[in-house]
Image (tube, rainbow, N blue to C red; front, side):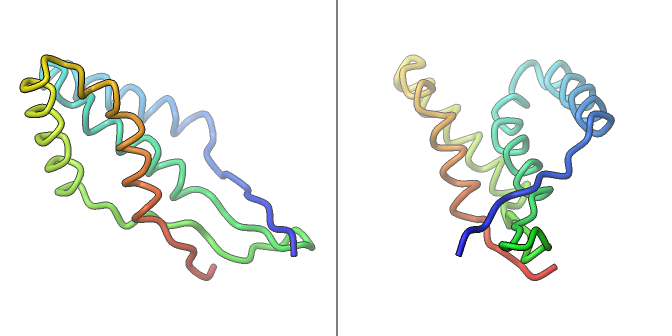
Amino acid sequence: MKHKFRVDFELAPIVGYGLLWLVIIVVTLGLGSLVFGYYLPKTVVDSTYVLNETGADAGRLQCRLSIGEMIGQAVLWILLGLVTFGIALLFYPWSAMRLVLKRTEIVPV
């Protein structure tokens, strides 16, 4: 049984999200970039479909990561970054992706 993925994420939403997050990052003086690290993969995961052998939709990936969890994790990583003088932030991207994938499930279409 071989399954594939299809991502329905077009250029217009990418540009819109990019501009929105650019404004958020500037307004928050860079702190929004830590939340962006969770939001970007979540957005891609949420627009991904699982296809069966015939190419029909078998399900959709859905990440159940809330904005509150994202902000909480960002605060934790800010504190870790301050305590370790930034060394902990080298591991932040992997931690963010791990959390997004842990909160992802396949739901019926």
